[in-house]
Picture 1: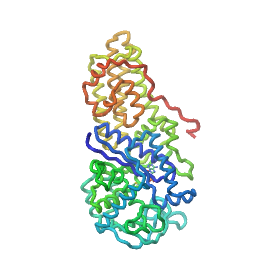
Picture 2 (picture 1 turned 90 degrees about the vertical axis):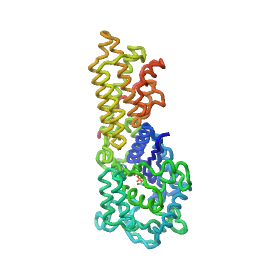
Picture 3 (picture 1 turned 30 degrees about the vertical axis):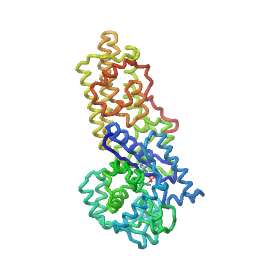
Length: 520
Ligand code: ME8
């Protein structure tokens, strides 16, 4: 087993069905998990649902069901979304599970034992939509005299008895953490935002509620439930079996990456490390706040009627094209926009016309002109130079960018190698060589066969179902479908030794059509 790598997504509020933002985050995390596995890491990937809090209580009331019924029904939609999008997690953590309550209570006890909790009265502005407290100075003016949170959501003046966490005592420690680990918060802009927020001085945090009981009970204070973010963040520990001394916990904690959206960076880079420091637990290595996905530049909302069901999107365009589009189109960390035209244009230009066409025409020619025979060949300078370009893109450039979560740049390097292959096909013109120099035609097609294997292994984390089908056609064994295997100089001769012939190829990425009415 390689070095451990633990990646988590945010756990989603199941107060509605999953939207495109949830799909985006799940896909990105799945790409990272598959990529790290392909690099030889021992990966653990966790996602889940965040089922407590006032937001859930209010939604259940609105629908005339109990919060527990709402959670059971809705969390299933998130599980189904992952299955539909080929997102392979190791653990789906629901916060209503008893073991999660135990973990949250243990974290609480440790913070209390460290002297960081005290009982007082909370008076302040609360946004149910964000499940967050705001300072008067952070509020913005809404319509009329209404006050809104910095995220534009309604806030209510709230007064109740509450437990507090001494967050004010952690400002300097957090600044030291950011200073000593410049990659703890990424992208850099979000780190600067957080450092400046902490630098202005932190106030203690109200961490329990008495006005409703849908949550984790506070140990020794049973009329209080924990503020939903205290228990939500704990999910990252629960999933490893903490507080039991499990092998999973000792192997995978601290997490390598908490992948989350930009709106919840504050919770993950201020509250979460402060809670962990208080409880005497190691801190995660990195928190990455990705951008928001917008529908033709607009935020999706029920009132605008532009909410997209990600499963329907995958059914229309295909799971792999959707995954490819999301990772390719948007520079990771920034906001991005999507539309049916953008998906169709991007996937047709790159997956169908460039990569798909390269695979289809090469394998068809090997099948038709060489009876599918994969044999030894002698290469010339042009062949060696093409293979060197492809190898550099697949084994070095794409991995270097993906490691830094620069997916679009990594795919760009990959695409340039695909273009180099297509230029090579045009220059070498194997269809002409067929009559003039069949030996040279064989060399050209087998050189392309080698290049396609590299290209397909490199892109597998992004488009796993299609890439695996292509690798099946090429006859690449399952255990050799890793980026680490790209350095195996002997693979081609091993493939030759199997004596397996290539069958008639099946198309990998057919061209997409714009659905009727989509351009309206
Ligand atoms: O915040 N584009 O849950 P959530 C991209 N339960 N990402 C988006 C998005 C969009 N349009 N909209 C939301 C919560 N997200 C908490 C998390 S973690 C201990 C608790 C992202 O269902 C959002 O930033 O509102 C978050 O990372 C994730 O989707 C779940 O959001």
